[in-house]
Length: 303
Ligand code: PDD
Image (cartoon, rainbow, N blue to C red; front, side, top):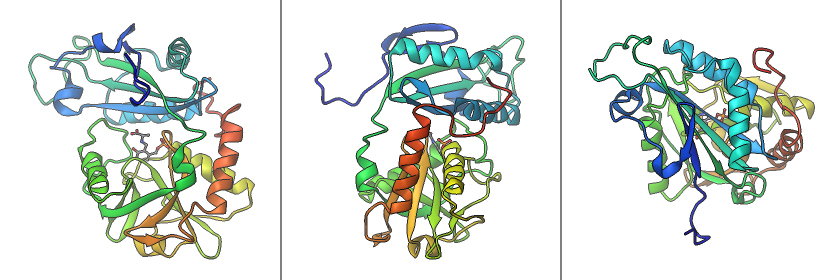
């Protein structure tokens, strides 16, 4: 029985075409996602019961799959409909959908890819309720620490091999804060589970270009578009942790927390220690638009 104090959790899971209660959902312990972290995933925000900017998430999924030589067990063109109807049948109005595709269960536990004709990939989804609109973090902001970016070199692939991110996030939690900003050669790459942007003292939005060393955050792309609408100049270039410490505003972007301010880094207050006005405006605009229409320009591959 739910007591009301528990965190929301998924009711059912979609496992290879079947919807089953979460407690009964299972895959083989030989699944390569479990044994090797051999798979990719997406997290899409749900607002008003609708998947937000899902075409962009599917385009990134398609790219992740292609980069690891994995074919979706369901034609990608059918995924939008399956994802949305699963969300609707789960009754989730605000929260997120998790989707994962792994290279299936192969009895040999051999490192090379198994024959995809013999070993079908595994596709799972689940949906969770989460307060995205009235999220407490929007008011309080996030406190962060900087930690070395210890991850592998293909961070553009949304891989389920997340041990690097887990260790970085845990370092943040152990330090009593919410997010870890990952630093490589003095430059911030991204957060442990978010993109990062800074607003300089000259009111320029600075954001690291999407290359192989970070995930191309869909929410960050949306933030760039919205900043453009507010006539805020954008510079896509790497920025140092020093620049972040001295910035007017710093914010993180992710499908699970949308756009939210970073109010302290390594114990140094950013701005006045509250989410800044530009961050708040971008978040407001995002919520206004994402609740009813795509924020990101439509990708014609996925209707
Ligand atoms: N993570 N960078 C990393 C390392 C991430 O894990 C995420 C999101 C992002 C933001 O990407 P997007 O705006 O497309 O969600 C950037 C998700 C939410 C997660 O793993 O739960």
